[in-house]
Image 1 (cartoon, one colour):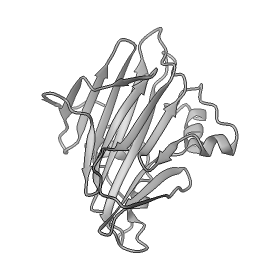
Image 2: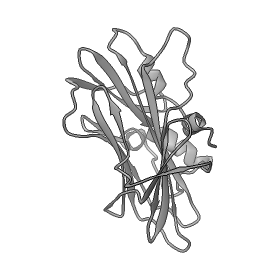
Image 3: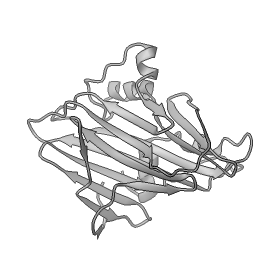
Image 4: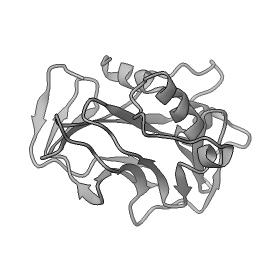
Length: 223
């Protein structure tokens, strides 16, 4: 995740401003809440946040992905957030969680769960806008674990009940809990947010939040 960076002063809690309110991205490790130590502006309008702590390093990239929706489908805006965390040598992260949650003062009036194959998503709307917040579901995280794709080996979701109840979705947002991360492992998870005018039967925002991390990072030409 390297390119020419413009450092920002006083990094804020990473967030996205949407027509329905502000969504914040946060990291908790071993029951402690962590703030980014540094933030940088990226060339296509995204931001890189760096967390340097005693037992781990973490990066968060928030940017607008390159969407490949069908021609008749459009979204007003889509943003992704990719967390990548790595314990220091000879240390472990016993537990951690990644969250995308609404700040107080949001203006949506209704919400509902809107999952799909490999997708955990929540739909929020008012009379004017519809917004989807999404991430990969437990089934997809297990598939990535089995492929050695930046999910720790300690993750063990055997039954459908465990897989489909693993990601925590609510009116407050989405939380991804994670099991033990060993010192030789990297864990990567992401969130996607997309919104559009509230048009009946329009699935554009739902499809926009069903993407892989590499599609998000392509928005800033990062691999």
